[in-house]
Length: 200
Ligand code: GRF
Image 1: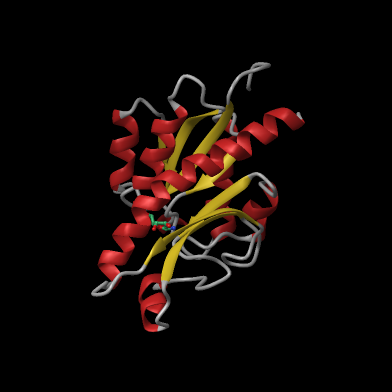
Image 2: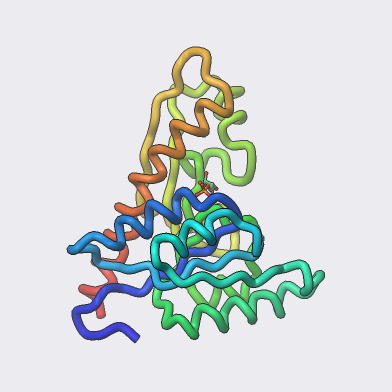
């Protein structure tokens, strides 16, 4: 567990490349960071982000969802066990592509963050960049929010807008938003953890 005055222990859940996860780890390794990433966990043992995390000196775990079939509860129980073993205080979802059940959401109520590539409440769910372009929006962006049972519906903690420029495709816009995510998420998580340290 955390020592008095120590950093908040954060676990990051990923399913893929983990570029946000890498940004969170890097920021958490700064001398004055209010948190440290103590575990990176994936539902996909092949997720590229696991090797990235290990190279940065962070412990990793893979809890493959496939052997669990439709038994989401058992899969989440295995995840919860890994989180507890690591002494996790706060969970950050970063491109974690499994829908969570009320079990895991409830276990981490008020202590689980997610990043979503739109200016919520606009465009929850998938294909956010194509939807923003189709709508003719002047700007897009990303949102860090607390996780609740409704998908992409939890209280918003912070947002970053980026412009949409002529000629944008979903791919070019996605890259611009992703760059913004790498600044927004570490900032929002650090703010959240500072507030948590003050309140305990
Ligand atoms: C990001 O766009 C994030 O907003 C979304 O999934 C993507 C994950 O990318 N939830 P990465 O794995 O962090 O590179």
